[in-house]
Image (cartoon, rainbow, N blue to C red):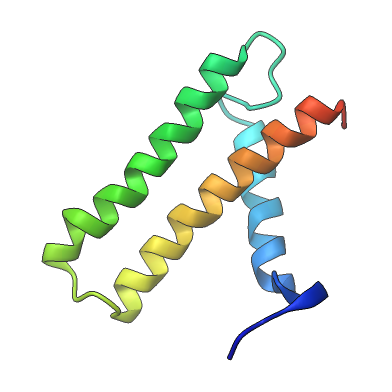
Length: 96
C-alpha cells in the first residue's frame, strides 16, 4: 500500500522518531548541543548512515533479507537517522 499526503509518515513512526530524539538529547553527542558545530553533527549523522549500510551489506549476509528481524533492525536504524536529522533541523530553526 502506498501512503500519500498527510499520512506519509504514520503516527507510529513519528512517535518512534520523537522518542528516539528525546532519548538522544539526554545522552552525549546531542544534535542540539551548542558546543557541537555542523561538522560534528554531520559526523554523527553519517555514523548513523554507516550503520544502515552495515545492516544492508554485512548483517544482510547473516540475516535473511526481508525477514522480520532484518526489517526491524533496519527500520530502527532509519528511525535513529530521522531523529538525528530532525533534531539538527530543529536546532537550525532555533526551536526548543
